[in-house]
Image (cartoon, rainbow, N blue to C red; front, side, top):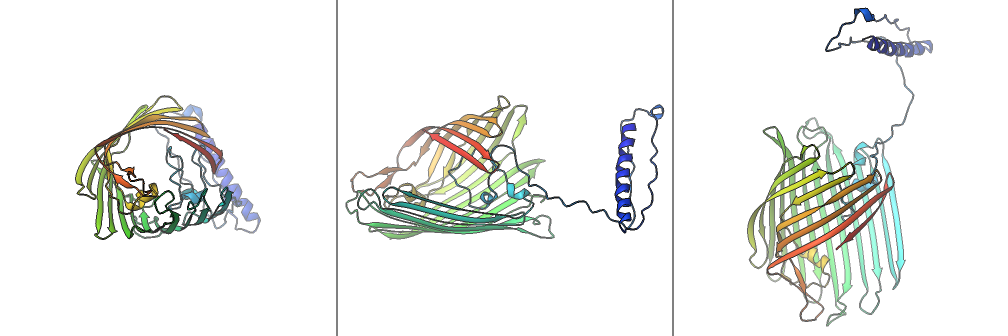
Length: 450
């Protein structure tokens, strides 16, 4: 109690000193402070609680503390990245994903501007240039990006070129409604085009024009909202033109999710609807509806588990239709301060489009059959290691048994292939990831797969 009394005296003394100093420079004289009644050690008695008195400082003088620039909060260790990479669509899917990226822009205290220009020139005259510029703050963000690549190839008819433009932006929405106040609205537009020839085919001079226009809008709740939510709408128009056929594929994705308390347990509820139409001689439709209900991660000491239920309704070509209900279990066990083992069971259904398949198989015929892969059994396990605040590694293994796994087939040796489906496909894989922070916003990563 005596220590608490001395602490209060010091606080009051500092406050009065600041007021008297201000009054000497022209402010009104402040009333002097009254001494605080402090008990002596003989008067003290053991009490379960200590009630502190309230102190009110009155007067017309003001205290102006020296101006100090606040430093943005930077997470120590891995995943410190440039704030521009927090913009929608800015993250490269090929980067290492060992955990959640730190949302640095949420803690930025001032506007951050940054840009990049990258260029290279390889053999067979293969120039590449890319430029990006972005602005990030707590209230808004913007990112623009342009890229161009070309190659003359190592032989005749191997020349190809690609170009892309993209712009994404987001802003904080101000509202008197507590559910929508500080919600972040986002929008983006992109254009991607590729041109290449069917080298190795019976008609190698035939050129394919592959292009995609994308539009997206989204919204997510603010940090202080009583109910978290997110929603997004994406539209992609894909055009494919070559000697065999000219077609257009329209793809719409609607997604939404929220955290709802059920019997005092916050459950994540998610919804995704995919619909694509391919305009050929006859129109083909592809669809997928995905509903998910997931629990929070429960922990008991070094052991934790998260469970979920996933429901799918799918429709593909050649009569593919089905409904599936799969459980999902993700278990973690902390072996030591630096080692964490995990084991996941996650069967699922993957939505497929002609756009994705022709990106994966450039010489795929536009008349190919598109069906959705069903992972009826899917396991993954591994160990994550955090050796220091700047170095983390991950070793993982994967086992899948799937139906309708696409296999590229060019049995006619024409240079233009088709997709074949049949039976059950078993896939076993291994991967090693390593990421090291070089600076608070730069990192180096490497991945090996088998």
